[in-house]
Image (cartoon, rainbow, N blue to C red; front, side, top):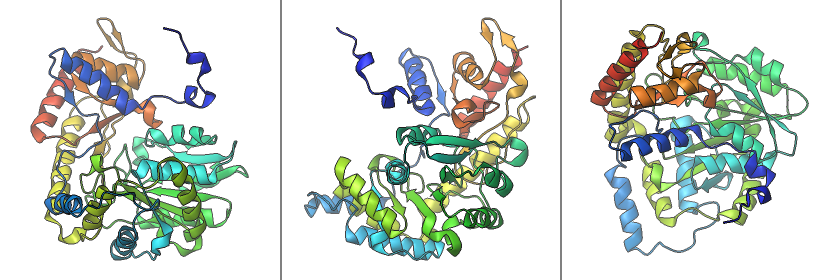
Length: 404
């Protein structure tokens, strides 16, 4: 068979495999060998889609709502999203400003394609979701990183943001609650960002709010609530996390009409509208007031309890410095204490070598922090049972004791 690698585009050659998917693949390979691997690497709720949402999809099939949907989403769904933004966030958007896509990831990519020219800079606070830099590169932009540590709860400051902005800056992207750290920016911190951004009218903000409903205290705050920069905020959200609907593939953006129109044009050329059945299910989901939803409430209670358990267990392991997540379902401890240590043929030099060691020795799958822009850390997902978390921590503690 001939090798066509040299014929591939520079674009695809510049991209890296998703670290979360890479670790999932490695753990699957071990499982296929009969090894009991505990997977703490997947960013997916271990809950099922609420019954009323599934029933809406079933009814849509019976009603033959199986034809091509409008590219930006049905009017009914876009209005339901606009109503949700008003109800839950106090934000006023017209249905025409909403673009529905096949997941929040596509919504972000649409935003980048609509904004970025070759060489434009995009500011990304670290730690960040693994796909942000690769998406910027795909749009021929240049990622610019702002660092943080566990000592600052993985938050960057408005001063850091101000120093990172240049005439080439086109956008900033961040998530709150954050994947991978569970960090949540409070209203005062978001206001400080907004004051800086107000001084730089050439800079857009992509606010990834996919974990909005998974918060362990307080109420969700959006940077879109600040009127001075509202027209330059692109709000991203969806159903995957809050409604445990990862497989339904539906996300959305809310943005200034010019951005929404541009993304409608882009989407019309490479995916068109997302599944008509998923859209009908989404209407039922977005019409659900989270304050009155037992499904959401019980899921958040479970995640909070698991996060506290994992925090307590990791805090008891020498050299592991965990942060306490305020939302999402991740914990991102600093594990740099183990760099330079070894066991048998394993030499720990960085987060990736430690993650591979723990996979091989403890049979626990994690994701190394280098993929998130913080090589001193490792991401734990606690989207699994408390029993599995306890067993995983037992194994990890035993494996780390072997390093010297």
